[in-house]
Length: 114
Ligand code: 5GP
Image (cartoon, rainbow, N blue to C red; front, side, top):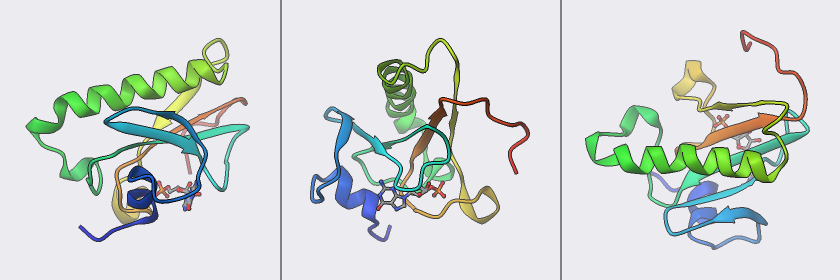
């Protein structure tokens, strides 16, 4: 896959402030927040999107979802609720081609999304 800014973040090559990190994942604030809290959770491993994952990635995906719940709790979103979403490809609205989960909260979110 081609490298992306998220690849550089995952490798610790940029100045971005991480809200969480471990050996498999990092979480940081979206540069253009769409809600009072808007975090991105990414694997350190290079994966383009959900469309690329296979059976070997099952544990990693479970871990990424756990990290989403953890950072949402850390940000005080648990009581009010929040949304976790991943965009895939052009129609999905994906603009950075390194798998990432958006964690959005801090306001009531509309449904369906645009
Ligand atoms: P996508 O549209 O691919 O689902 O989401 C990409 C997200 O990454 C967007 O919400 C965008 O604001 C965010 N983003 C793009 N470049 C950067 C960056 O350099 N730093 C951070 N923190 N967020 C970024």
